[in-house]
Length: 186
Image (cartoon, rainbow, N blue to C red; front, side):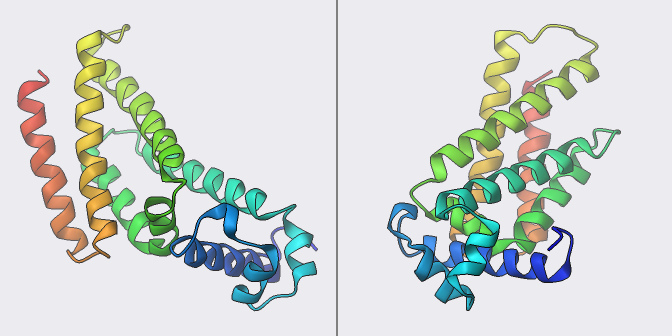
């Protein structure tokens, strides 16, 4: 079967959602292929047609999410943070179960470290471009780390609270942090 086949996409999505659900209840290492296949209402052989094991599914899913985040961050050539934040919030909300999986599961530190590194790299590149500089100073690196952690903390709390606030409220909070950060980062 071709990877772009609708049935393949539907099968992979079912397995991803099953993994996301199971990982909110138990650790990745405790999840069996049979349990995952049962949860997705698929045969074990179907799972093995797409993945080597549960870790392969998790790693591909993590890589896919990070690639999508990278695409969102780099897709706006104007560097308008409002547009990037809107796209990030939309992606997180539209993929709530997957986002929860990475936040609630015991493997979240590795994922969030990767997300932080990705955002920091893109953020510093944009900052260099905006300031017409070629070298990232220690001060820039410290301020970027502070700002990124703050934005990720807002998003993380939102997800952990099961999206108890609207997307607009979360965007407003991030914009407030952004405006105040701009005052000290000059």
